[in-house]
Length: 270
Length: 270
Image 1 (cartoon, rainbow over the protein chains, first blue to last red):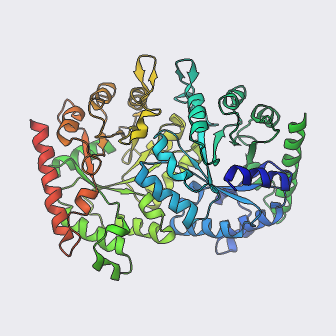
Image 2 (image 1 turned 90 degrees about the vertical axis):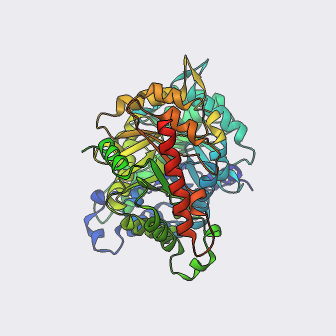
């Protein structure tokens, strides 16, 4: 089973297109967690236990952990171990390097940290992306159109008749020989998401930017929807993680996550 | 003193534009090092002791370490500690993310791992790069034109009258308000390096691709040279690290490094 098929299966089984970003900020964790040896791990464990039946995947942004060095790296590993087998892990590291080095990153993320999928930056081109696609049951989401204002600088440049991000989407379609390449498309980019869908009719989209960054959930779903009514994941982080800053934080997170899950499913059928 | 001024000072003091890439491959290390607890660290220590008087900087590619997880991360930290104060450390991680996350990477690389400089990917645009430029005495090299074949896919696209990589170089010039932004320009890209120099007359270039990847040292130097006769660093890795696979590996590495240093200085004045 290739990674796209795994995504399809997990979305159906959980009746969910929701991904929770486990990007804990030390300053925003409930104070009582500070008594634990690893507040991050304790926090992630509670969030995972409270939500794993209603999400397809957890997304772990490596930046939030690397800033704590060796300890942070250990927290990523242990978090991945806690995620139940029926739920996927996306390591959001936005790596890419010349092929010899990309291979090492693929080793780090897929073998050492046991990710099901990773995020990859397209700027270095095909040979930098390919090492992340070698294992067909594990996959990659290629940055296509990101949610930040800087997307204007290069991604939205006109190259002939197309925007640069459309060319990235077209190339990704061709690079998807193993059925394990998707695209990162910012939910803040209303109006452009449908252009990515036109350029890559079959690929899975990972959409960050709903919630704290202000992207419209309903419009994002409508534009990202594949002909078969699937093919997209919505990722939320801060609005779920910090739903409460007290002892009930995990329970509060579940409530918000459930609400997102249902809103997404409603938008799918609207 | 900003990062560009620090580069100028160290190049003059060492009479060198050479950077050694400390990217050890377990399969290629001298066999006797396998008896040590951390073969990587032992290897790096010997290379650094044998060469630090003739190089401006060591470049550490994080991919080669991350594949060993927590242990690898620890080896980066310890390697950085060994580098003498008069020699710079460039952490080659090619990171970039939305601003909130790029800030965390900057923390990881500059504060936790104590890099003097990092490499950064331009695809996400200005707000993703800015967090790496906040400390003026520490700097970043932005990927502009990379040494791999995949550079064709996007970097060499025509955007109006320019190649995409020229627009990256132009923007970098504008983003360099703190005097601490340079560019990564592959030494395999003969003919194009001079176009980058035209687009960014004042920036420092970091040039990988000489040696194992086959870029011409002499032509790269000629094209990268700034009007003041400086403004560039040549990075070599495998051809220095594996000059010998026996007990004399560090001595052999020094000989090759010295030869590169002298060839670069000769090319500068030719």
